[in-house]
Structure formats: structure tokens, C-alpha cells
Amino acid sequence: MDAIEKRAREIYADQFPGDAGYETREWIMAGTWGDDEVIAAIIAALTPPEGYAETLRDAARYRYIRSIAAGEPHEFGWIEEAAFVASNGDPEQFDFNIDEQMAARPEVP
Image 1 (cartoon, rainbow, N blue to C red):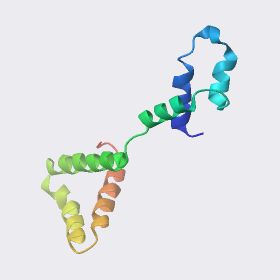
Image 2 (cartoon, one colour; image 1 turned 90 degrees about the horizontal axis):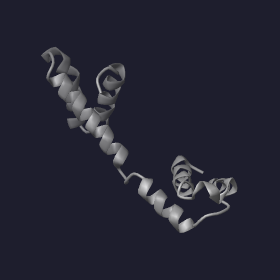
Image 3 (spheres, rainbow, N blue to C red; image 1 turned 120 degrees about the vertical axis):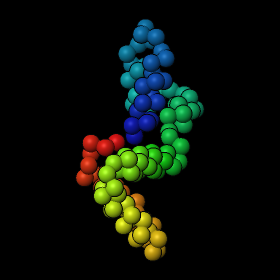
Image 4 (cartoon, rainbow, N blue to C red; image 1 turned 180 degrees about the vertical axis):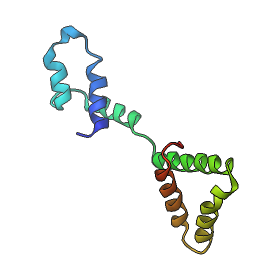
């Protein structure tokens, strides 16, 4: 059971009153009792859309580049170098270089 399914089962179990019995919650969490369609719907609602992680990563890269561009001009050289490498047929290298620089400066979001 992954984290999303576990959270879905917790949400579903929380819908039952306390007097429904301790066993009800335990059965739901164990997957031995409950409405599978309801749990599947909750899982679908909790699952981020495809590409969500990439969008967050791209947004973080953009904020990082903006923070560098707003600073001293000599700090921007590595971004120009990464862009040059990308324009010569290796676009993934640009992303890799940005990620590497972001990891080296964790104080920048």
C-alpha cells in the first residue's frame, strides 16, 4: 500500500463515527472492508496530475535563474555556458547544470 492509498483509507475511515467500532477502522486500513469504489475515488482525488513534479521543478529552476539574474553579472556566467551547451544539441545538459547549481546553493528556493 503506497502513501496515497494509505491516506485515502484514513480519510474514508474518518467518515465513520467513533461508535462504529475500532474494528471498522482497522478493517478499512487493512483493506479487508470498505467500499472499493469510494477508496478509488479518494485515491484519484489525491493523486497529482501527470507532469506535476516536472512543473514544480521547472518553476524552481525559473525562480533560481531569476534570482541569479537579479544579482551580480559575474554570477550569471554559468547559465550562459549551460545555454550554449544546450544550443549545441544537448538540452538536458542545461537542466542538469541548473539543478547542480541549485544543489550547491540550497539557500535559494
